[in-house]
Image (cartoon, rainbow, N blue to C red; front, side, top):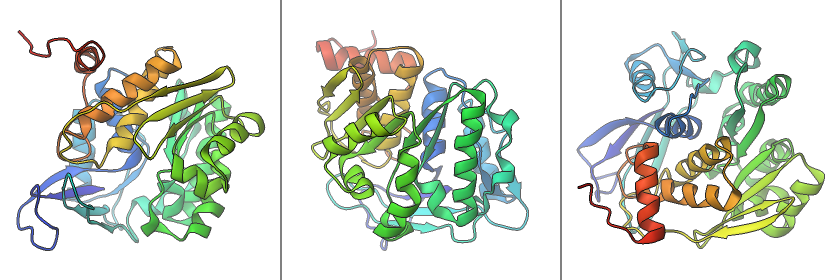
Length: 309
């Protein structure tokens, strides 16, 4: 979607100045991975309009491959309006009913788009957009299996998209199909009907999951695998805008996983990337390069001099 971000600190209904950017769960992760030095392709739909051009241009600028994107001459690019506050609830308004993205269908998920991919990441937002988008999500999982790619899944529950029952019915089954699950504690409780510890272990024993990463309410995170569990406390940073932290965390975790890092190292990198993003406005402004991540992480872990001399 095209993101129109109100000036910092202003409530949405009083804001007169907006900054244009781009937002979207999967595109945020793609941008995060690209900045961290990985090849990433985004598959999606935008309108054949100025907003769509802006979305694709920004993704290209970060090095994201958009050859799998489609521009729809009939449907508009989705729009997101929101304000930005560090200490109070953020007002988010979505305008994506009938948007190009909501018309995603299985026909767009072609096998050649996934060839060479090691991991395919999708969020619960996509299947909640429409019935055809849900079918496309299942097609994506099937195609990922065909090319031997791991499936990474983040429920990313957004209550404005549907009722609890609709989320449970549509997104719950996808959790059981993921090789890598990155989910909030509250999301696991909602979608699987049990405590986070219980549901995580169930996904490891009865689902396909190799690893379940749980983002907890106190902002710590745990990684549960078949070989054990490790935990990471959040890094203490001043928060400018908390939106985008979850997608940044996912990008940080997947980057470490792709590089063969141990779970405890992956959690630290994920927490570091999220900590950098919440210090900047917008969903993607704070996404770091690999060098910036490493310098920041060294500062967090070793209390080293962060000045670039």
